[in-house]
Length: 122
Image 1 (tube, rainbow, N blue to C red):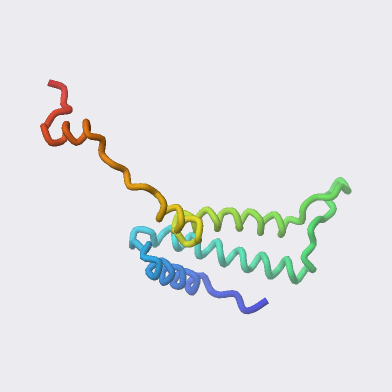
Image 2: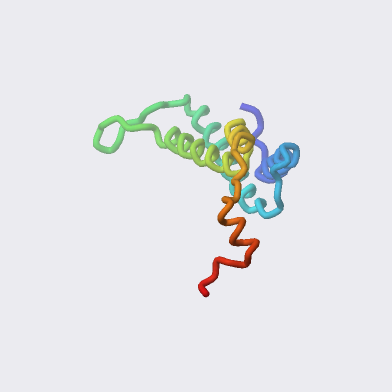
């Protein structure tokens, strides 16, 4: 496996990607920082797991087979990273969803009420 990028590198690359996709907003920086940390943890966990020979299972204290803890961590991080990447609009599905999402139209009644100053209680 190649050298693992630093959290700061992942953070800056993610912001650059968001700017290129025209989805960047300064208010997202905290989420991007968390996302970058998760991606870094994922790469580190994957490296350790691969160095251990990519085991799928391990024996528990009761001599039963269970999923290897590193693999379990990797799978959880993948799900979390996918969730954050959806929120940050960094993957094809979230991009496609934003493009096909119809604009909400104001109902004629709501438009009438807002123009007439109505809607209050008497």
